[in-house]
Length: 108
Length: 155
Image: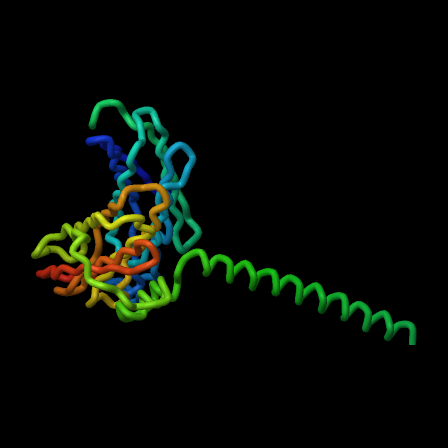
């Protein structure tokens, strides 16, 4: 199943905030399925990479403690409207996803 | 006589191939493990998690780290946290929750970005939230207590 990855950028005082929302269950491996009484296997995003114009700016390693449908934010100085922001992620089951957006001129 | 020699030779070749293949896979697994700090994320205490990440649990408290978190979270499954710091040359930031089964939530390596990181995290119970910042090879930390009404770990 393709998981949605969405990016939103916001420019304020020359600093661009990059917000990423991935629809992902982020199972901890500790929850018990009420129907089968069995543990639901852990399934979580391990790595998210943020890059601007093809250059990596931040790499986040994540554990199971990040909420379901993770919303992560980083800030980048000096990025201009028109710059390309790319985010890629991969999880412990080998699934991955990515999204790309262009920083818009007017603050959204 | 010739036949037995052929057998031994074949076995030898097969054995070498098997060793080569398993060795290769073992190497790949190690390379992957090194990429994501597995031990740190599996650690049961804040100290062990920090040792797994940075090799030391020695941190000094810093007033230059600002944690933005709710004082009271109604739902422990979604607690918005953001960290900013005015410390110079920040290399990485980590968020840890003391009372969670595995305290390390996330660690971000800042390569070219500003000293800011935000995420929504899970909290099992009322606990201190630690933010550890690596700046110029040294570790600095700040903490804030977050009261949780309904835990977000487990069913």
